[in-house]
Structure formats: structure tokens, C-alpha cells
Length: 297
Image (cartoon, rainbow, N blue to C red; front, top):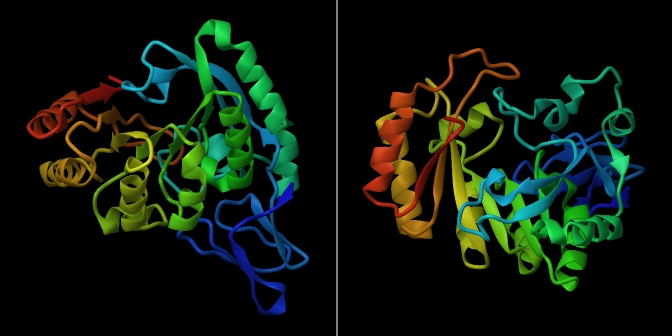
């Protein structure tokens, strides 16, 4: 573990985390909404620093990034925890570890789901994959910004080694920490989950910080947007039009958009997204955007 960045001490040994828009006020011995940032004796710690739950060499298109070194691979790592609560999460066993293990503490979850992998080891492994067309390191699988310090330190080392860094994220991060890490980031896929405040409230978050993060990231690196279409929640013509208009006007019509098909998982049993809904979204997007893709079809 490592003492966290972006927090302030409050009365009675409480701390206010200032990494993401949740702005968790965390009491002594407690964790934030992400589960893995914990108050120990009045200090906030990134408990998962230097640990991973998953490590694989993936095609870059799996992130999904279709316009960033297509045909290459990228060494992808992830941990546990997330700062939103999507009831359809495909990776819920690591994103929401408190729902998938028998223990009660962050330490129990780390012991069960993760193994030690230092930033230096990540970069060395990434280098060994260069003959397999590896271009760098991707921070993915769970929400990377919940283990911000590890991502930043690893990205700095990867950049020094001449490698690229990719972040696959829900975009739920505050401006100051995002600005601090962006100089080391080459590409991001940002999951804009819906386009209404009421929709984001169902996930325990807010829409505007995600849009702001994407707009800021666009100024510094390559970005692509993903939107998982969930029947009955974010699948109307109006939803698609608002998303597409924002991308065209705020990010640029050359920003790739990936519409992804939902399948039942975690707490959601709704039927998979109908293909006709995906085609509707695609047709609307192609009127204003240059690059539109359908995923999980």
C-alpha cells in the first residue's frame, strides 16, 4: 500500500478523498465508495498499490481502441474496485469485490483476488512482449483511477522506457488528478454510460464530471468513446442523439464511438440489447460522426 494523493485531513481523524467526484468523507478504519482507498490512523492509503488481479497481453482493439496503433497488442493490467456501481457490470467480481468474496476487509479481498506486481515488473514484462507487437501498458478491467498512484507511477516508468500508456476508464475522476497523469497517457477509452443525470444517479454518480474529463483528455491524447446500450435505461432515440451531438460538438466528429451490446450479468437479468436498437444508434451516429462501431454483436 501507499499513502494516497489528493486527500485532506478533517476533524476526528476523518479524511476527504479528492480523487473522484464521490468526494468520500472516510472515517478512521473505513474505506471509500471504491472499497480500496482506506483511512488508517487518519491518513488515506491506496491499499492496492503494487498489486493486480489480472494481467494479459491483449489486442489493442479489445480495449476497444480502433484508431490507435491498429493491429498491435498491449500488456493489460487491472486490479479490484470501482467508484461507480453498474448493476450490469461484466467484471463485477473484481470491480465490486465486496459482493464476490467471503471476507470482510480490503486486506481479505486483496489477498484473495490480487498478487504483487511492482511498477518496474510491469514495464519489464511489457518490454518482453515487444516481439509480439506490444506497444506498452493498458490500465483496464476494473476502474484504473481507483488505484491512481500505481497507474501514475507505472505510466511514468513506461513512458521513460519509450512505451505507450492506455487508460480504459469510466471517466469518473476530478480535474486535478487527471491533469497530473495526462502527460504520461497516450490514449484513453472513456465509457460514457448514458446521457442523463437521472441515469448516472442510478449508478451512484453524475454525468457532468465524465463529460468534463473526456473533454479535457481530448486536448492531450487520443480518445475513443464507448456506450453500452442497456434496454430500458439508455436506449432511446433521444439518448443517442444527445450523446452523438456532444461528441460531435465537444470532442470532434473524428472521435471514434463504440456502441456495445449489453448481456445479462451481475444484478441485471434484462434481455440482451436487440440488434435493431444497435442499428438505430449506429444510423443516428453516422449522420454526424466519421467513425462508428458496434461491439459484442
